[in-house]
Figure (cartoon, rainbow, N blue to C red):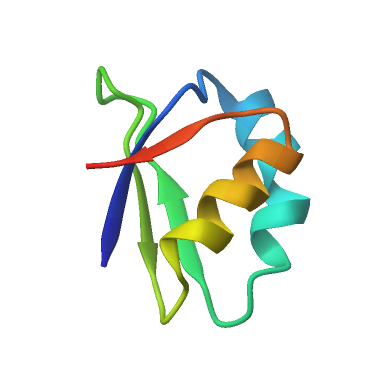
Length: 65
C-alpha cells in the first residue's frame, strides 16, 4: 500500500480524479477527506510515478508519504 499527500479537497475533486485513477490497472484507491493532508491510499502493483502522473493529468498533486 502506498500513501500520498494530495490537494484533493472534496467529493467533486474525487470525481475529477476518478477517470484517470481508474485507468491504472488493478489499482484500488481512496482519498481520506477527513485527514488534514487528504491522504490517498493506493493498493496494487502500481508505480509511484504512474500514480503521480495520473493525478497531474487530473489537475491535482500527489506526494508520496
